[in-house]
Every structure is written in C-alpha cells, then in structure tokens.
Amino acid sequence: MEHITTLSLEIEPRESLGVSHANICSLGPMLQSVLMECADDSYVEQLHASTLNPYSQYCCILDDDGIVWRMSALTDEAASRLLEPAGKIDSFTLRNINASFSVVRKTCETVGVDRLLDILKNCEESSFRVSFVAPASFRSKGQYVIVPDVRLMFQNLLMRYNQVYAGDSEIDAATVDYIAEHTRISSYALRSRYFSRTMDKADKIPAFVGNITLHVSGPQSLKGLVAMLLHFGEASGIGVKTSMGMGGIRLI
Image (cartoon, helix red, strand yellow):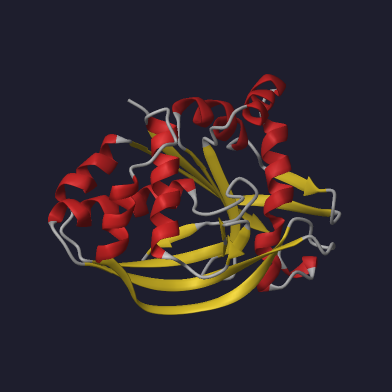
C-alpha cells in the first residue's frame, strides 16, 4: 500500500527579504530547485522523463506571519527519494535573490492511501470549505482559467488520482459530469493574483487565491467522492504547475 507523506518546514526570516505577503508564493520555483538538489541525479532525471508527477510543493504565510514550505509526496518512492533528504535541511540559500533561510521547525506526517478510501466510504458532509493558499490556475482550450470551476477542479483531481494510483490518467467523463451537476460553489472570497516563475521577471501566470465553499447535493457515494478528492488535493495540489509552487489548497 502506498502512503502520502507531507513535510512542512517553517523558515525565517521574512522581514529582511523585502518580499510582500502576496509574493511569498513566488519563492516556489526557487524552492523546487532546492528540493531537486536534495535528490540524487538519477531520480531527478526520472522525474523529468516521466509524465507522472508524484509530488507537490508550495510556500505560503502562516497565521502568525511565519513562512512555511510545504512538500507532499504521493508515493513511497517520492517520500524516500525527495522528502527524506529534504527533511535533513537546516538552512539553505536562494541564489536568485541572494537570501539565506534557516529552518526553525519541521513536521512530517504520513498516512496510508487507505485513509482516502475510508473518507470515500464514510463521509456524510455536504459542504466543504476550500482555501487556495497558493495561487491556482487551470488550462482549458489553450487559455488560463483564473476562477475556480467545479468541472475543471474535479477533472484535474480525478486525473491526478488515477495517474498516481491506477497508472492511467484517463477519467470517466460521466463521473465528472455527475460531480459538476450536483456540486456548486455556494460562497466565495477570491482575488486574482499573478504567479511569477522568477520573482524579478515578467514571466507571470494569471491565477487566483482565496476561499470557496462547495455544496454537494446527492447520495453519500457522491459526497464521499468529493471529500476524498479534496483531501487528496491537499497533497497533490490542484491546477497547473503544482511542483513549482502553485495550486496549494487546504480544507478548513
């Protein structure tokens, strides 16, 4: 049985960076480079050659204004070859902005994928509040979609789940249709935000951050499926560029 492992590194300082709250997420691409430097070359090559993305990572501000770098591995191999060496980091330097960081707190959590199946079978909740803590964006018909769309959200999560745990990125269109027909956004507090691949360049991806509440009308099986995919999304990320620091979500 595979496991999902999440490693969170709380880092400092922020004040000396001169980086705004909004731009903290743009550390993501540089942190991805730090993460890749932790892994052995053969695994980095394997990741670049594979269509499977077994990890996500992003950087955001905590409630107490601390910075957290959160990494999730969706497979045991990614956990052992990426997160285990990353867990040994005590300090690092981001050369692009000539800034050094110290790790002040580390937390690591591992759960079996069977926990997702328990949620699928047992969840009775009808409402789910989702916080997009790192800028999220979707691609549809060659364009970026910068508002949360129920169909695109669950199509993306189903594709990721199937790819990681079933070895096939194909999804059942009827399942996506059923979710979209019976799930609606009942409230939202969102704002647009650009995600910069590099903090001092104009290569920006249009995206959004904020909160939404989803309401599901239907049988337990549908509520369980929506809940399972959202819990999976906390680890997998959602939308585009989740390995670069986009698409981080948390269930509130």
